[in-house]
Length: 528
Image (tube, rainbow, N blue to C red; front, top):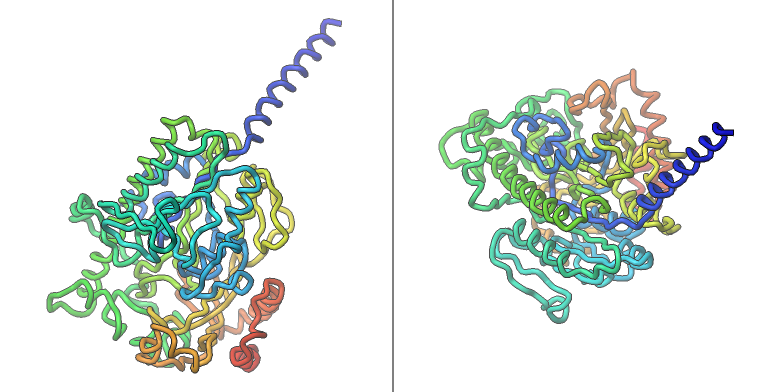
């Protein structure tokens, strides 16, 4: 009888404790989505890359130690505007309509704040927007004009008049200003509702203008260099280096003096040094400027985190940190992004949610940026809308397996030989392999180019680059130094990847049925 009473008491206690835990974790969390511009995993200490020993991001590393670090998160199009549109819509570019930097996202397609508003959230965005049209789906906004200014930025503010003339100027560095404005917003928010806040930095976008207080940071430090900055005899294809390397001077802007239109030797090094020594000096200057911008972001995140803790918001706030894509930091002697290569395509992604995510967690789930909106909607208590193509990975956050998850992620860069002279391409990445098709054509017919500011730039270095395939075995070649597409040992693997690629293009509405000239190229070269 006593044992029966004891068992009953224990069951009652477990029920109460379990109920309390459920109530705590089922309460709608606040959500802060933090995104920097061009911040890459190589420059986040928690990812343990070649720059980790420099300790560039102690506050982000702390966030990762408190939550989950995702190791395989990728952009579907590694450039600002399309990546942000995919994050906002949960859709791939042809579905949301934003293919390149000229794309716009109208208020009716600003789905993420709309869905969270339906769930009772107040919504706001502060910082970089870069989607042209007014972010009217948010309850409140303060956003930079396009790229915005590094110093003394203007912020278009919802309460300051009619878009696009509703500007308020703030003195100081943009990373400091954006953090100041976010903290001010949080102080004055409607505290009767949970909040969803997108907090977006301009840094570390080029040309890497850092706050003066960082001038001495890393001044006397030698920054580790990637070996592929100097030598990579088996890298690339006719599409990326030319036959017998003849196109090296015109494809992909560079750290070294290789590229004839834009390189960092010309930009940063004014002495008479040449060759590898000039490349070394240019790389050191590039990375120090870049990392000083990163340091400014990380220090401001420390300030934001301290505020959240002081306000009692830390424990019931989902915090996401990411970049809008990765960045080439001299790998393959490349700068900027756009490429499907790992450093450009991969996004840092860290999530914090006490009581749900176990500290020091890691995930190798194959995620892309179309999955962000579905996951946040799920965490807020909503169902993923059927119009979204991405998937929620909330099971992963709870330490549980996902069902029917993708085995590969699709990528496409639509622009061709513009700005940084990167050829148009698409491809597929699995856990182990990456297959890329460079199809050598812009999606717009030449008759339409006259209306675009990049017309002269496109023509200046030529348009007709070669068509070619590249295959990389990421298990045996994680730095993508050896194109294996012509290797007989990989032909069966290539055939299987092409089937997956074709299937995903159909499933995701990413075919070229609307672009017959590109479709002809694909059909002609698919079996090359």
